[in-house]
Each structure stands twice: as C-alpha cells, then as structure tokens.
Image (cartoon, rainbow, N blue to C red; front, side):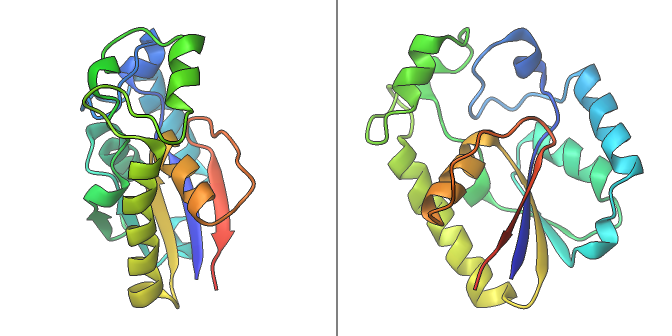
Length: 168
C-alpha cells in the first residue's frame, strides 16, 4: 500500500501564531493561494482515493487539491486536541510540553492518545485498501503520530508538504 500524507495549507491560526488543535478554522488567504498553486502541478489521478480530516482547513485543502477524487472524512485523523492550550499564542515552552509523549494539556490529548487512533486508522487501511494508492490530507500532529506508529524517521512537516510511505 502506498500512502501520501499532506498537511493542510496555512490556516488562519497558523498565520497569527495561535495554537489551534481542534478549533475549526479556515485556511488563510495565503493558505488558499498556496493550495491553489500546488493544485496546478498536483496529479490527483495517481491516487485511488483520499482520506481527510473533517476540519475546515483540511476539507478546503482537499477540495482544491483533489476535486475529482473520492474524499472520505475520518475522525481518526482529526488534529490532536490541545485542550486548554487551544486559542492561545504558540511558544517554545508550550511546544516543549506538547512534545512530551505521555503528558496531555488540560482537557486535551497526549501523543500516546493520538497514536492509538492513528494506529487504528492505519490498520483499517491495511485491512481494506492494501492494494490502493491513498492520499491522506491531515494535520502536523497526525503526521507526526503516523511517523511514530510506523517507526519512521520523525520529520516535522510544513504546510502542503507531502510525505510518501510504502506499507507492507
């Protein structure tokens, strides 16, 4: 199975430096332009289907990038809940706390929590789509969790960056 992971375009919260987690914000004007630019050279015909987080920023990205592809919205690849940290300014201190595997922000999810639902999603794909080429449009936190679940080299991803993965 071949999976390509893409992080959504720049969101309104990315633009102003706020932590968003599950806040359902739109792409920024720049994010829309970035995504439209990427779509001009993006070959969606190489994929059989697309799985997408149900949040607006990922839905908008998918609708622009792959308008002719079947899009399946899946809660298991929704962004990590940052709980009480959502809608607060990003900082190095908060990023340090968020990078601790077992700790969760108040009313939020830990990295271990998100890995459990991402692992379920990967197993679902293996069981049902093992012969397909799948595009997954999601969030940085989910891509990080997928990398951890699959024991890949951990790599931070920028907006609209694509990571290809082959799974046996």
